[in-house]
Length: 258
Image (cartoon, rainbow, N blue to C red; front, side, top):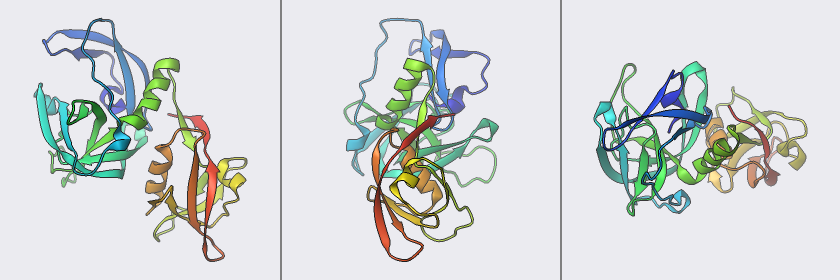
């Protein structure tokens, strides 16, 4: 499920399709990825098959499951509207989560969070997590802009939480210049001994793409980096402060996740 669904809960219960309620325990959570793993002590329950969110194409049919506004047994259908959509959401305690999201027009409303997004073959390919609204305050419903955490990316965090109760995140080793207003993500400072410094990326460079994906701002850069596993080698193309552009090969470090 999502971290924001269970965060701060004194107790957790899972309701089965039959209406039976079972007490659940928290295995682990990661607010920066907005993922939590809970456990129920009941066997012989049906399970979903994991799909491959990396193989999704824009236009593929999807089905969202959940209990929007408390209306259980609700499903909605739509398509994959966009892929690799940078989404950041604030949670309790002021911690932001960053999602390299699947965007869908399947109706997702409050109460769908943590529910499954399935492909046309019934395989889970995403975790419904957020919606865009036109409201400046209060609760608003679906306007056809829903976002799901890709399951292939989420599974790394899920497996870490199950195996160790904790999770990690990848580290590029830079601090962004938050005053920069141009297109791209400007490097304001390097972390000593981390991947970006070792690769030779200079302070003042502006990241324009990562593994060929265009980077428009620092949120897009953070989201893209966090979509990888620690230890992955990525290609980072920058505009150099001295002029021209250059592509660097950077091995991502690792840090404990929130």
